Length: 193
Image (cartoon, rainbow, N blue to C red; front, side, top):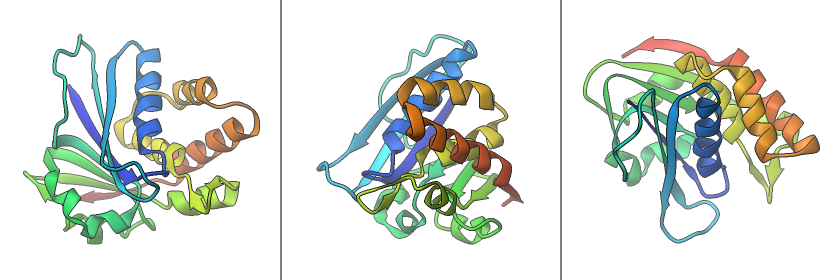
């Protein structure tokens, strides 16, 4: 079973990220379970969203803070106490919304049981170019999913596009698809630490 944590701020789309990723995985025959945890609902507050994916029925339920993959939508969260709850399993991956090749520098803030692969993409820059901004906040969630599927090797970009079209319509859907595709292309694997 693959356990993924999305960590972002309220309004960035961490919750929607896990739901759309679950939908994309289910399109390819996987079982998927997405759920979230956040405190007082306000824009900018730290949010954790959890996703389990397996090729068998998922019997586990509830939050987890030991993950195979940690996806950080906002590098500003790396210095806050909430991130200290998370531990990456040995062989896990860290996916960061930072300038490519800067990920290793930020990875030092993450608890790890062993070796960790680092991936980086500037999702913020990508969505700003597309105009995906709500109330002054760049909505990086679909761009970061492009990076996630690049790192995982599944689900396909096609399944992600279908899941996006199921959630969004018109120009918003098209901008999100372009953002995810561009992030997929621009994600850098920085190596293992």
